[in-house]
Structures are given as C-alpha cells and as structure tokens.
Length: 92
Image (cartoon, rainbow, N blue to C red; front, side):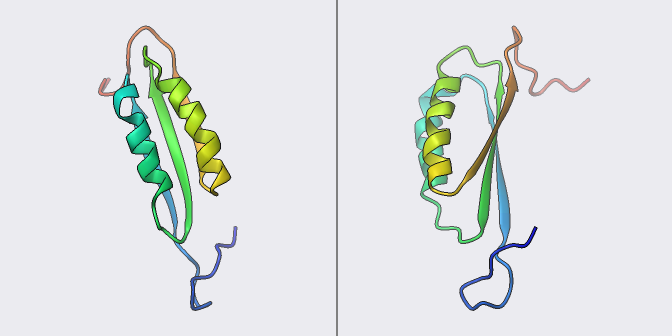
C-alpha cells in the first residue's frame, strides 16, 4: 500500500488507527465520535471500535457515525460481542 504524499510532495503522509473500546458509552459517544470527525490530521485515518457487551444504545450510535465518518474518508471497523458481561479488563 502506498500512502499519499504530504503537502510538499516529498514524503508519505502518516497513517493512524484510533482504537475506541466501548461499554455502555451512549452518554459520551456522540461527543467522542464528533471529535474524531473534526480532526485536521492530513494522513489516512482509521477508527477501530470494539463494543464490549454494551446494553445501552451504543451500537446504534456507532452505526450512525460509521456512515458519517466513512463519508469523510475515515475508515471504520466495528468489532465486539454481545455476551452477558463485558470482557475488557479480564486478564486470564
């Protein structure tokens, strides 16, 4: 994969992945995802969201923002699970 050139045409722009773990975060998700959309980063950006068994409307909010983010050139990957309890923080 070849990255786009910077403004001077010299070197490639950086590529960044933002990793966002989510568990019952509907209260903060709109603000959080809006801040990702408002970044002025000039390289390629990807958002990787892991929904850790949320029981609120987090999944719906993530899906809504996925369209907006991808329309502005930010790749979005959504993963997670719907088990009865969250797994984040469990160190087995």
